[in-house]
Length: 365
Image (cartoon, rainbow, N blue to C red; front, side, top):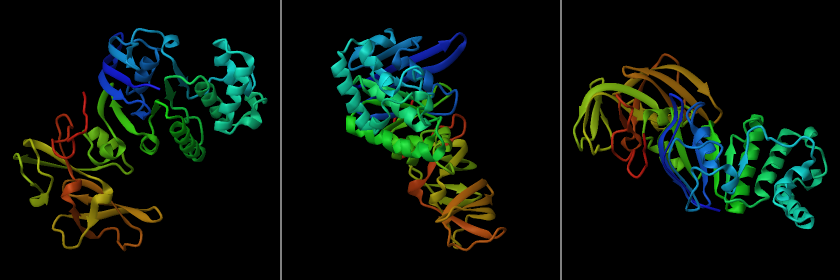
């Protein structure tokens, strides 16, 4: 397996820039997620790492070797596509063994290796079946088997679970993560599903419009988003935004919303103008004694919890509270926030103000 390093990689398609000067490092054995909406550049980034696209500029290293201008065949990687890309005229055994046959491995060794991989994936009973009649889950296992049978330096996966239904996707995500852990493989995985990224990834890169907005461990990205885009994209419901006009001095520990003081983390840098206070729904408390207030507009029952939507002088806000809490639409409610959970943003570029929100969290773009 191998470390993968991306240095200032850019990809232009004519006048369109798909990826803008991206830099990050994937450590040996990590399960690394490239996350973002459609068209953000994540698949293009993966294809450049794999050698299916050549970068316009920048450098790509796999296992310490620069490979940016080398074709895919010289990179010792395995690629798993969303739509499986199996050979329909071959059975399961033939599909899995084909890369070994192409390498000239003797038949007896191929047979043993295929059986070993089939046992890992739990598909020994279908080795002699044609792939055309298999379920989506079994076809994805065959595609994974064809990838891992070679023991490559890294696995690249482009939304491999995207064609599966929601319930089976979750099951396969657990299996895929367990397979990664058994193999101690370096895996790079593209997805637009933030829940999938948070569930499976050791590290996450969040991309938007070809720019790496933030990368780090899932907990840091969730708790301390580097930009408003990240705060909106990660989390369900996403982070609340309350806009206000004001000035924050360096070291100041409160802001005023609708002329009411709200405690916030101490900012390293001051800011002024149009600003935003961000707070996750689970960190919003309904507190009758709190001076900052909102009117309850709607509730959404989710079993153990409920999502309450409130209208405030600074915008709508959602609170995640216990389903047993009694509330009524139309009533006024006090709102309190734990200062340690608040992120402040400036509105011009949507960047988080420098505080715990981005200490130690890598930001690009």
